[in-house]
Length: 326
Image (cartoon, rainbow, N blue to C red; front, side, top):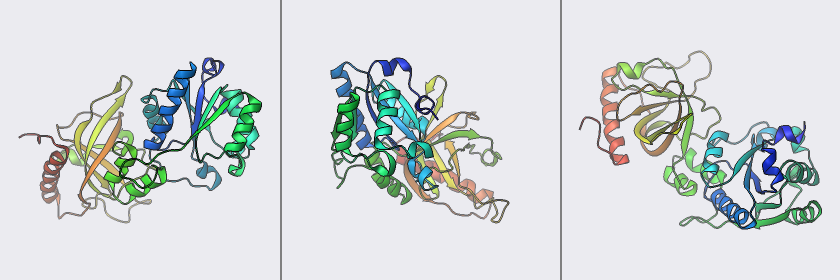
């Protein structure tokens, strides 16, 4: 497979000799943001475009058969990175062939041939090539040979944290339900995102219509329960406002009996506090702000309806908004 089919970058940008950085960038957390900010500064000073290359899928998924839970989809990463002022976000399609490249192969095929890089910025712990053989010393030698200037950046720790932000630490915080810790490392609330799918409309019969968010397979999920969230629609015309909402993440124990066909899966159901609207087919970003309670089973629809009303009030309080109908 040729590099041109692996790296998606307009030829004009490669011809402009950009400043580039390459990585998975899962989460686009504060460490990533610092690296990209330095890239943009360097690019502007050099009069060059700033290009971020996202590696996808995660190398562990290719090398070990299973990657870590995903903090952000490629679409989310692209949107977040573009918001940091870069000129382009490219994607390096990682597969077994790419994994087998030596550090020299990687530098020639990606940094020189595909990207035309004049400047390459990496983190201080950056490794590259087969079995992570390439290091900063090798990158400097390859830069001298291939015509690009490498720099490394040691990332500082966010205020109040003992170590630089990392995707691993954020995944652990989300899995433990420590949303505040995750938000502190991300610089924003952790968000789940997917297309709104048709459901059984049971929420509508209870008086609380919900949007059922799909595409969560492989996503980094917090513990099951009810959450105060902000929901944002992403469509062809861009992003809508972040709307206060309440969400249930889990398996609906009041209605869904155990032992059904196929393995059970977690569902994310979102109710907008302002009331229902037709969201079918839209992409919904669900920002997790606070966990309100655990998921539990109720005796029937009336008990569940009463609890959802309480959840809506609790979500409104957590989000600092006036409950609907007040």
